Image (cartoon, rainbow, N blue to C red; front, top):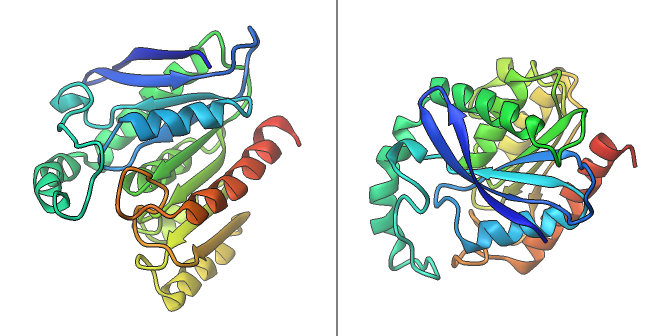
Length: 244
């Protein structure tokens, strides 16, 4: 599986990024993958490679490039509960500085760069994200309705921008929520808002999961949750990007 380390020109500098794509010498649909708050690291690279193996060019930008190249904060091989508070104490100022304005400027740059790659085919793209990356994926899809055909968010605060944001979605949507992130009542309210906005979506709580369940380098990891994520994500991309 070919991979590249890239630099994406943005309005605020150069964002380093990781890309994976099939080794067929062909062009493939593009997927912009937003990492969780811990950023680009081996588990994200592996997830990008796995998705690319299904026929996609996957671009994973360093969300916090303004603060340095990834990893912006050095991480242990396994992010256990004993180190999590100290890591988040360092991450939160970066997350708080990543304003909506920055997110949208970066999204313009990321999508422009992704679609310009010689390995990426013409046509719509998909955006997926994890944790805070799920919210960034949502904001990107809302801001680029003619370009983003699918958006998926996993254990992320995807409804944080409210019903007005949902009403501007034109992409097909999947949200995979952790049991600890949302109650059935709040899920019902989110899904009612999606219904009212006319969004083509699936939105569900993954049984037995806690926040961060897709990430195998954390204590939150759920193998069944990760598999359910692939079982939902891959058909969504197939429908919207390849016409399957």
